[in-house]
Amino acid sequence: MPVWSRKDAGPRVPRTVLAVLGSLAWSAPSEATTCTSYDAAALVSECMAEEINESSGIAWSRTRRGIWFSHNDAGGVAVLHAFDLSGEHVDTHVVTDAEFQDWEDLSYGPCPEGSDAEHCLYIADVGDNARTREEVQIYVVAEPGEGEDAPVLATWRLTWPESPRDTEAVAVHPCTGQIYLVTKERMESEDAPRVARAPLEPTGLDATAEVEVLTELAVGEWPSPGAFTGADWSPAGDRFIARNYDSGWEWVTDPDDPDAHWGEIPTRVMLHEQGQGESIAYRHEGGLLTTTEGVPMLIAEVPCVESEEFEGCAAEVDWGPIDTGGTDTSEDTSPAGDSGDSGPGDDGGSGTGDDGGTGTADGDSGGGALTPADPGGCGCNSGAASLWWLLPVFLARRRREGLRPQPGQL
Image (tube, rainbow, N blue to C red; front, side, top):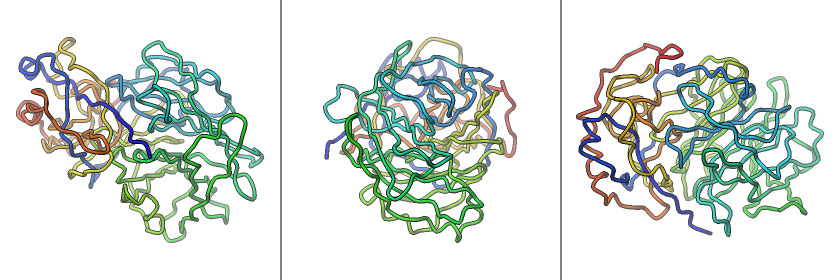
């Protein structure tokens, strides 16, 4: 099994801290943080870009601070859209050598063995409302930089045993690179959602492979789970979440035994009441981000209020040196549910590991409970990292219970 290597950096911080940190590159502590308790979901912003009119999957950039990627649903073209949490459409990246039938989900994952890429995105062209597709595809591209196209690096051509299945929830395990699929069974259907996984090795363009069905989820024991429209693994590999239109369903998972949890009843996480939501992703320091189809695209979060250190397979990121320019970001611009807790991994608060819910108090806007470490663990050896724990002094803010931000309040 290859060991996947990635790099790390951290959020933007107020000028008072920047004066101390200077232009040193960021190196986070070796332990990941994982969210153990969520706050109420809240609206972050609205994206008015006509280009993103059917957001169906999201993933955060490991190389461009504050950037998220999304794609449209069926009827679109083979492109990835980059946006930030202020709701600005930042870039369009053409995915070359890929077909577009029904793109349904987007995940970050390890890059294919033998490629030169360090950070990769998996695009799931797996939707099949009519259940007539004889095969579906999953494409891997290197995460595109500003103004770049995204050529396909690897392809899976997949079939379902017995008969085609409509699938919208796909996630890639951050430790193994294994692709997991959860079928979308409509509420009126008597079929239970199936969990399947693809072969570890890509098939290429000239072959197909059958997915391995692991289990059928016992959703009859849950409170109205409905149809699954998106999924994600936490970057530490210790949480898996699948969503329907109003709720997320989260399992605590073992990175060393990724399939041991499927028989357990997951915890329900209430999402923002945002209409047709089909995407979900873990944020960099805990919490979740979701988007909706339609214009405006509603960007919402489920902030993390309690977290703990976890030594999983959390990845490093390549955000590079701290940006010492730009506007003063010391003003409180966090979204609702900001706890102000200065403990590590507080998603909404501006303490150690503020996820940057608004894109101003911190440049992250990334997904997942991640204070990065490679699968073998990495240290925090830079001077900048040693000052990470001073951030709560500068960044602690009042908790604002129940206050939800309005669009543009970033």
